[in-house]
Length: 384
Image 1 (spheres, one colour):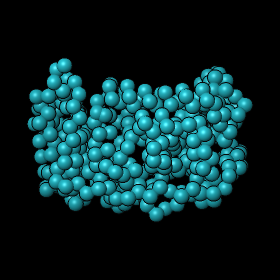
Image 2: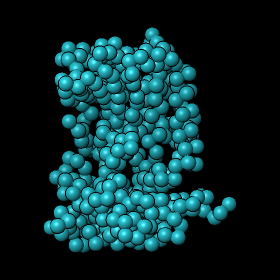
Image 3: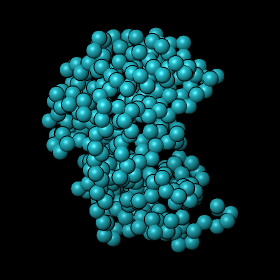
Image 4: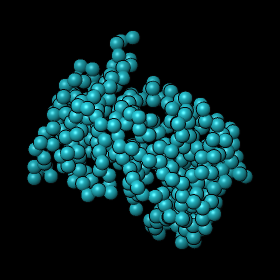
């Protein structure tokens, strides 16, 4: 394991969501790269025997591109398009056409990229693709789609994150803590104030600025025909030319010693998130040794990890104890991360949750001890 990276994690930041009194082909992008070439790139994974076809159209724009005072613009733009109509069809009409195909279109906005995902059976491929392409190339920008999308994002922030999702509230608190004053430090959904300040005209301008030939990658997998790829290249080559500049990402602020943030709310349990920014991504050779070491320490939702075995298995302190060497957004109910979320800056984190109040301090001390032991002693041949 890269000991310099891990030692820094030992003196990293903690975000603790604590119970109150009884009344939180893969793309790798590094600083200095460009968004793309002059025409759309393609990433293809043919599977002739598959009856399904999946599309991923990725624009290299994300939450870090949000202007000050309008945090959430990228997410709101993606949702207004991905859950909206076309120039010729209302959103209701789009849904009515998708339903008999058992097909879907969804937006996946993130910090540095925004991906539109389409899935269909190949029996409906031609009709579905025309609809999917129209949604992305000629969005309707209906005021009703805009208002509905903004209301959903505001509810996700104000009701779900603050009130119902202590685990993710703790992770967002940690992210804002370690990236304080940094473009990566705000929620990718945006802020309540920023979302309320955004207009439909802002969404139109954001789309026009970022949906360009040099800013898009086309991904297709499954039982498609080559004619489909030729049609996609032609369609998306009709986007305006150009490659918008990328947002510069400064280095995260230095963390001094062990910094702790408490987010107190009435709850029965405590969620603990700890971590530290690291300069290792999948573009680096160190990523793969770190991945093996991390699997030993705390791979997501498995009992491979030392944290899970020592804290839950041996002591029954809590439900789950995991560690990560990059941002982890879970793909549904699997143990795997969502694909298509490359980031230029990553962080090492440990999640400990949910912990009964009486066990919280001991769980924190044991987690830091297990990490320190790994850093100081490394893996035995048997553990490796």
